[in-house]
Image 1 (cartoon, rainbow, N blue to C red):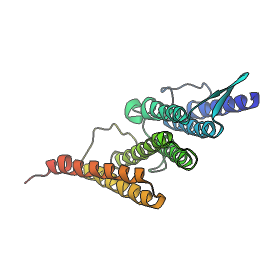
Image 2: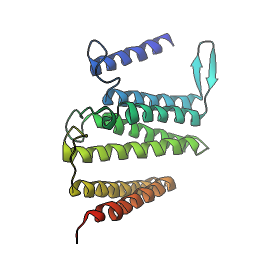
Image 3: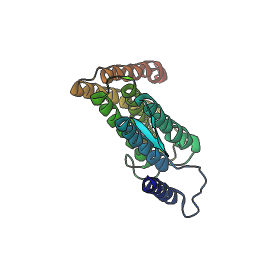
Image 4: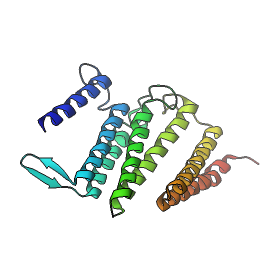
Length: 220
């Protein structure tokens, strides 16, 4: 147990050093990539807790329900990459090349782990609560990554640049539509009604956006 705590502390310090330098501090409290790693570790911990059914504390073991494990890990994802390290909030430019920048670590990596947790919960848990919490988080995380990359494709690493075009609006609609179709295909592949319903929701948003926002800018 002591070795596990030491290992976790060592990894945290390495992440902190890699993100902020030897002083372990910089202009932002936590970087996007750092937040993504923390969120990823949270989902890994949630899977472990669901498997064991408890959290081990000194002298005793505390039972933890799968739903609470899901709420905790998904809440960490929402708090760190979703809010504190969000580049639209911090104003920090993205680092790395398009599609393989720190948004991939901040949003796509945790989303994939949340999806893995949802798959595990579907296979081994009787209730649907934890599975749906993880699933919704995975879908939102993947969508956040996709839309951020679309934004970067038009304005560059600094997402807060005051620039926009009709082409960018159309690109968001196309990305939403493709994402919805991908969810539908995955839903059929995995025989998941929840994924198919999520696909319907995303496609509906794309269609509403196209009619209410994109077409309103057309002249004539």
